[in-house]
Image 1 (tube, rainbow, N blue to C red):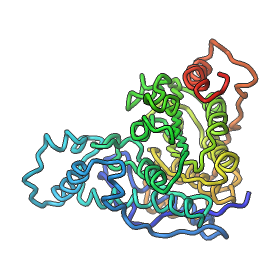
Image 2 (image 1 turned 90 degrees about the vertical axis):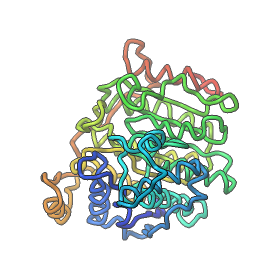
Image 3 (image 1 turned 45 degrees about the horizontal axis):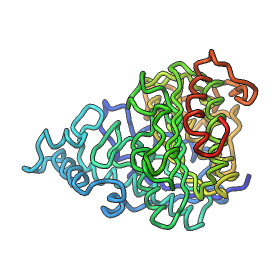
Image 4 (image 1 turned 45 degrees about the vertical axis):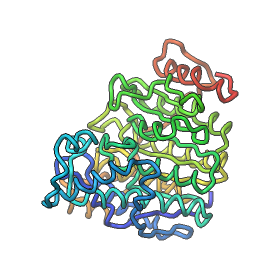
Length: 400
């Protein structure tokens, strides 16, 4: 389908960097953009790319406490060697900073505000009508809470963008999160807001951070059914993952009819990801991107804001998966059998310590049996699907 896409990007976004030993390495985003450029995606008709200004304090305060924002600023100053006498270790830890997950680094506020600003710029492009789709590939930092950092996330850019859209007059926003980790920060931000439907498909909290995201988490007293959680067993493969995605997301979006669809495309569901335990291929992830794109057109008049997210297999997985995502959003999907461009492979050889993948596929079929074909009560994936459908479908007027 023909689409228009605005990509909020510039090199400054790689300054969101917790240090050389941290798994959230900015090279994963840089390699993605380089691969997309090597395919010519960012210069195609209908695709625009532009720098975005950092989010202002007022924009950050749509989701975050002013006290927390001040601590983030001071923590970055402290890491830069400035004297900040009012900041001690206890204050940092109270706000989730100075931990192994979220160590402080120089310029932390500026770098985090840039990520939030990029996602806001992508949201503005969609809301204003200048593009059907907006992409913030460095975004998707979905764990940050109102007053604290969490899970590699300082400011919660998807939540900030959704809150901004509500301020502009949006009455129904849907958020779909396919990261392997529960989208807890976005869920928390809109827990009691019936205008926002959050759907998260993730590994079961019994085996993975952040330990939340059970099907029984369905929203606050004024918004019961607004939070939807599909908690999949560790080891779930392509067929089960796609079966669950199709069994839950399309019916809810078709019923909710959002004015804009926001999605987070963490690719740490991959079988080789070092931080999680699902067994999903790049080919299944590509199929998921295509489904979300299709649903944006079917249910939200094409209004789609998409972000990156987690993903810690930095060379083999993240660049290919997110390039497929950008290609899908641009309306020019890449045939999975396509070789990766030689110039990109040479760039990888220069900046990375491992050879680049040679194809845009892993050769997986990405086939699955529709849940409509029958429910197997002995299958753990089907049990997870039914737990979610039983918890929320009736609240949306749907039959479980």
